[in-house]
Amino acid sequence: IFAAVEMAPRDPILGLTEAFNADTRATKVNLGVGVYYDENGKLPLLGAVKAAEKVRLEAAPARGYQPIEGLAAYNQAVQNLVFGANSAVVRENRVITFEALGGTGALKVGADYLKRLLPYAKLIISDPSWENHRALFEGAGFTVDTYTYFDPATRGVNFAGMKASLNALPAGSIVLLHACCHNPTGADLTAAQWKEVVEIVKARDLVPFVDMAYQGFAEGIEPDGIAPRLFADAGLDMFVSSSFSKSFSLYGERVGALSIVAASKDEAARVLSQVKRVIRTNYSNPPTHGGAIVAAVLSSPELRQQWEGELAGMRDRIRAMRTGLVDKLKARKVAQDFSFIARQRGMFSYTGLTVDQVERLMSEFGIYAVSTGRVCMAALNSRNIDYVADAIAAVLKA
Ligand code: PLP
Ligand code: TYF
Image (cartoon, rainbow, N blue to C red; front, side):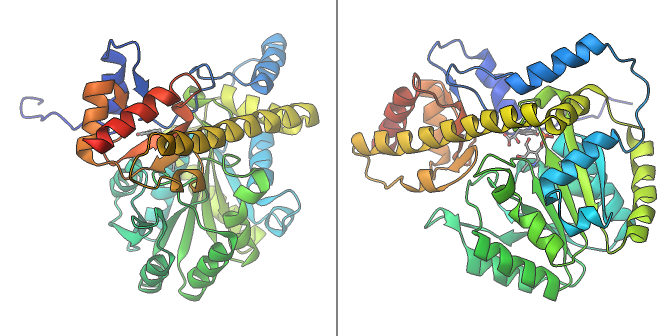
């Protein structure tokens, strides 16, 4: 049965890590995958996570099945993070949350449920978007189109173009939006622009699906939650996927969540029963450990404070690397103005480096970036930033 099977293409981002791992040069730098590394180039284990894990290990809980929707304390904590504990949707029980296998798992459960609910709806993602968005929604059976998003001239958002795209959509279309720290560009909407997007989505009867993989990496928990909060305040039905891979540095534990806002408590209960059916036929119920750790951190005032401090530390370090790289490129007298790198937010920057320049960074310097010119700023540190700035300056000149 396998004789005619062809080799599938590698994931363009995860494939880079395979090539990076095989590289023997001591000076190599992986700016490809979106992972936060600390100043020592190491993947951190957060102190708040370590503390919660210690308590959990000592309690040595048995590992029974979880409910289909996951741990109630976790789901409640996620709602409070996403919408705010005092928000109307939380108080009125109009939001339901499912513990999911990372942000990807949350998107997949949402996609499968939406396909059942709105089988003929078109789904649109930003141009460009995270590589996996298109594949994931096409895999769930959707036709995926794009809306205008990035402006290569300013390396910010082409907001007029975005509004025109949204205004041209048929009613009932599903719009996938990045809450903050847009992947891959680092270009985000302002609060005023979000308000306009909410107006358009409402006026045109679109269905918002907000992907929030980096809450806390742009400015902080509350300000980064502006999109779901504005949609909720506008009384719209909506989907939100959350990921704690980056914000808790729990990548391999696969901790995420899908939240769905409905018009009433009764509606929400019926939707809950349908999404549970989707989950049951996918993986039955989520794993215990990661969600328990995140719930423990978020429900302890001390650990929550410690976590927010550590999150701010990651955010500030990325910002310092952004301004550092801008300054260092300027000092190397490159012709281009790279100040946009300091305006972009989150882990990524769309640098404008060409396919050829990215190829040279890899072959001549052992610096790995996505061929689109996306670099992960969170992989820079004070020991490799000069080397990276030298290399970028070199490939820009020749
Ligand atoms: N959505 C976006 C925009 C992402 O960048 C990522 C990154 O991994 C995800 C979703 C998936 O999150 P997770 O790794 O938790 O599955
Ligand atoms: O965009 C990134 O680099 C991260 C990590 O299939 C990632 O979101 C990349 C590709 C993928 C899963 C996660």
